[in-house]
Image (cartoon, rainbow, N blue to C red):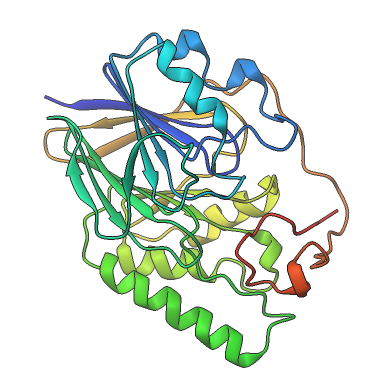
Amino acid sequence: MSKKMTVTYYHHSGFSVASGDVLLVFDYWRGMSNKLPEALGITPEVLARYNEVYVFISHEHEDHYDGVVYTWDQYAPVTYVVADCLPEKARGLRVKKGSEMSLSDRVQVKCYGSTDSGVSFLVTLDGLSFFHAGDLNFWHWREVCNAKQIQEADEDFRSEMADIQGVEIDVAFFPVDPRMGMLFDAGANYFTLTAKPRLMLPMHFWGRSDVINEFARRSRTRETEIIALTNPGQAIALDIEDDGFMNITLLAPPTLHQPAAAGEQTVSLDGYEGADPFHETDLPIDIR
């Protein structure tokens, strides 16, 4: 009997996966000033459809951790799985790299590392595996970093990837951040060639849908399909046949879309403490 699931993109690194009466939610964030239109996000009406909701928060950075998720348990039974770096007020099962648990007879989770803060998640739902990288990436700003910083970032990323190589991943959500400038997609390409997920959905692209669409076009491989979901509420349906073949269907497009600003964009490091691109948060870079 085939399995049918729906994967929905919301904003930045926020996705959900729905299978029957189970909903998985990863790194939900409405954006600065709640940019995500309410009608295209996760509403009480959406939550009421499910008997089991699992919310995963990879780390404490503002662009991955939105306190609104803690209002959801009044509309549906919610289990929160949060990195142990989150503040004490963040409720949930606290996890770190290496944590592994069964959340139900249908949902299992194992935590891998990150090259920034917190963890990355491998969640299995009804036998299908979903990897959400959080902020795991080859973070480097080649135009401003020295060779030693780039080498250290590369070694750190490869070390974390060594744990993931050989792990079976059906769907991966992975950062592809254009702010890094030249070779911004180096981490995503290395992940694709090393982990070989069947499907990759780029994330963490700060509204640069033009860049992400081009990345998806030229970076797919024989082993990995890449689909760019760039509009809030955009979704795909997965129909996995008994032999494992995955059919992917793009569902009805969302009703709202804010196009990326035209013209050249420059990267400023003024928002960093000490102009350090390896500061603990990746949020303050201004690309206006």
